[in-house]
Length: 255
DNA sequence: AATGTTTTTCCTGATT
DNA sequence: AAATCAGGAAAAACAT
Image (cartoon, rainbow, N blue to C red; front, side, top):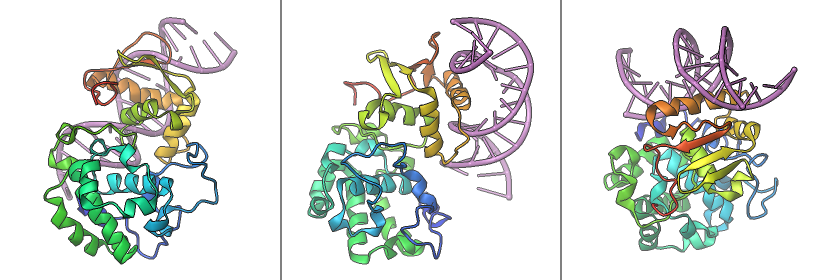
């Protein structure tokens, strides 16, 4: 899976600040994801800033990047431990990283230390990146290694972005900052929720996928496919859905 | 490169 | 009337 790191995601000769770089797909767009921490449009993009000077938002974006790029299981990461500035992040010891993110913490620690010492060349040179990361992949918390998130228990779930639609919906439901009234719980216990702003949801999903032609019509088709796989269950009310037995991570108690 | 899975797109028809 | 729901079919995108 590390191979993916070397592919098109690291385009040569592309500036790190270029907002059109492919892996920036991972991140939200200020327009629809309401800024937290009072960020404004003039805030820089994390790779263009030294880790020591990262804002909380930068830290957050960096985490998202790591999760997506290196396939770290976001469920291993305790978000509250990372609600800190770059300076605080840099002062964290390896132990603290492990404390905050289990095995993934080891990984994050290495990535950060490399970034600090080697700057962004760490990311610009696919081979080197691969080699550096490889040694640490062994103990990994990589999704593909088959380690389930339960193995990294004891940490509260995060709302870090995942690639699947249902996870996106779930995480939106669980993060009031980003939700802004688009989704609402109808019955928290039973996992029943309602799409309040259908077109807003489509827009957000479209942004995530870099697809401005997304509509609720099409998104809902994808949701209906989840009935078959037990991710969602049918609720015969308009714009109302229910998490099925194969959906995880939405329950309040069971984190 | 081959295959399986998820998502997107489009569509026809029913329901609210 | 306009949105939404239902799925079939096929293509595209993604993952392995």
